[in-house]
Length: 126
Length: 126
DNA sequence: CATTGTATACGACTTGTTTCGTATCAAAAA
DNA sequence: TTTTTGATACGAAACAAGTCGTATACAATG
Image (cartoon, rainbow over all chains, first blue to last red; front, side, top):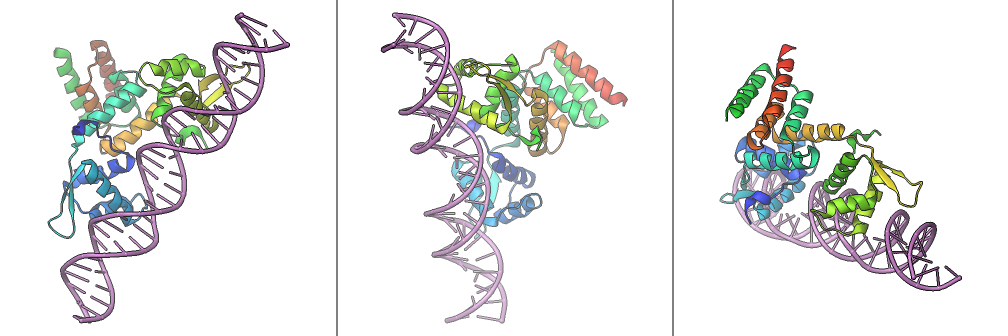
């Protein structure tokens, strides 16, 4: 029953994105942030966050009237989970194919490329 | 109304995976392949593939009693779609972060690493 | 104290996905 | 020709996600 297999939905990921960024946020914080790109009512966001709380994805500080939410899933674990799944179903198990896709279609700065190169050098040494 | 915005579900991706691999397959082919890792009845797979046909995700050759299905979404386009989405929602828009994640957690062979290195060299030149 | 504004709780509706039972059809086997 | 086998079609149930209306609580303000 660990957190490992909790798989956030699309909307839950959007909320988590905000929580990861801020560390902690109220429903209104999150809702305002999401409103920039999406239009759903306040109670929709509220309900979603309540459900996430039930599922154990976020923790809730109820000490004041206005609850504060914080993520329980780490960004890293979640990234790992999704990347793994994606490599399996979409890239025939080959991480390098995913890498080529990502680098080929989405620009990265010279600095980022340098960093990746460093990582590759490291991996090759082992 | 292009194919661009068709977003395959989890189950649809599994079916597409088989179709991409084989180029063309019957419902039974697909179902047998999926049975290895999943247990759902034959008619479930059938229905799913019929719906995919309605949605325009696959084409269907009905010239013989046993229909043959083939993908209409390309693997590349679909990969691109999902990778893009993922970079946005999970990697703050940074492709290199996704790359680091993928390389860090999932082994790649020396040959693959070489290939990636070549790609990076190319990208740097521009 | 009454009103207003801002919260949470909760139930219910809508839409989409997955599942499967059953009907039907056609070709191959008996 | 009758039966059996293997295929598609189709409807409906089960489930899940997302949406929102409304009830209710409470504190700040008038």
